[in-house]
Image (tube, rainbow, N blue to C red; front, side, top):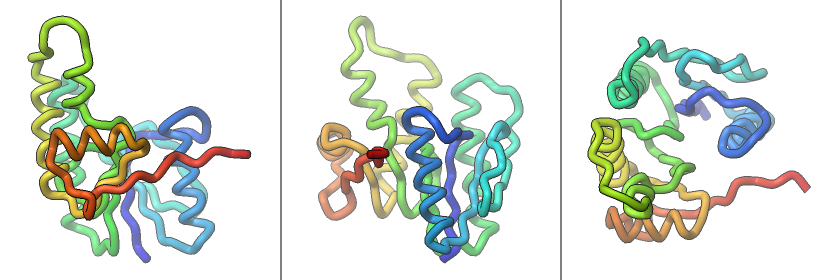
Length: 167
């Protein structure tokens, strides 16, 4: 299987990034041909073909759009059996909602509603991801409930897969 994984640079310690690193390592160990698409800063990973997605220095809203557009071009040019994104991108078979739902996050904040360009861009990307991606993976039941309630994602497309824990 030829897998393209879209993720921001990660390391093998700490939080969401460690979960991504563990996934990549397990896929390679099971013989999956893993291609990693990541902005600059990602260190090489043994057994993985690294594709760097150059992103110029941009404001955060423009950077989110540039990542989504750049990833779309790479996906279109490759012959992938599966595309899994850990970022809010435009074309993927599986989206891992490791940060939950931005719309729910904004609703939970105290104070005036966030109206900045970054939040508007992330909300627009998120709407598209949840409307068009065939499979959505949340890392917690709460995140899955928020995605279902706020974006109308049905149980057939939404699952919960917890991050692994070393015992």
